[in-house]
Length: 491
Image (cartoon, rainbow, N blue to C red; front, side, top):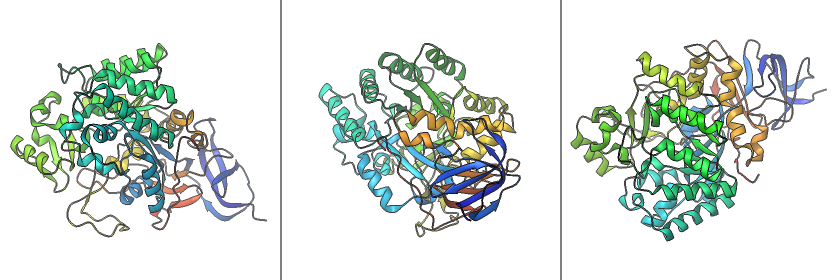
């Protein structure tokens, strides 16, 4: 008698929540884990996964890779849920509708966007639920100015409307708007507290980088958590804090001990990536972070920017174009130690800041796979989770494999589950959980993407299932698979 759709037999099953770490079978019925045990009855499809780890699929809280190629790269890295929470989108209703119509290989979801709400209110930008609208207008001076009281109220109204439509939180790109008053940030945090949703902040400048900043970026996040009671999530603390780890992580730790809800995330790369028109990439501001124009690589052509004049030219011509920003030297042991410290910080989650693909030439058919060499992105899009597991457990880190996996699955799920009920079924591998599962070789799992070859999929990932459907099977992408479902706050 066939009881199950799929049975994964003989793998090392790791459930970060219960502490299970043993050889077990995993049976799947429909889109749920039906049973975890030994000598389970047969399934319609049986796979021997002896010698492999079977665990909950990875949850990425910080992904901008909502093009099909980027989502596929993430699936090949073990990601089963990819959420746009730092920048956010607006209106979220349109973003969910458009993504559902297109289909995705992984689950998806969105925060509302403070930056886009400001663009709409202060600069008259028409919002369409697309992230590219943010990049296209990132350099506009109108939305970056200090807002009046009535304007702030209209911004808050946009955020409230999106929260009512199921937004997972509020994304706040504070670092892109240095003139925004701290009082506005507190008002957004208070709204989040009242609505019981978290905020996801790209912090304002640290005082070490910009002594004349209106408020230190780390202090602003902690202050908002303490004064409003909101859950303040500190996005990519590695790339906004750089070598100021002692002060910033110490500040977060003290705030937590005092009862503030402040969480952090990090990725294991020394370079960042964003739109070239970002305020902090103005030529006159690069030295604040110890950068030069040559620290930037222009994604559309692969050009290493040689001079300040060339940077000004590119910012004016194509402010939304993406650039690689070399902050920390991954070959330097001291800088590598900083990156590891951010990942090892207690309860820090792994999050990729995955970026959409840039095409260095004519874009191919949208369904093209493998991705051609003309596709360019940051290697973190393809390799963050595999690289993090390798680093945390084999190459310098001190974590056990279950501890490292918790940072990739259970901890992100717990961060959201108080206001997103569906997240209680993700990030775990137990009876009744969503069948979002990754199967990998613990000796081989590793990133393969590099800055020169950024779309090379990770190694060691054998199978990935999303809602019980194979997206990766025997280390090959299933190109027809589109099982991703929306993650919304009220479902």
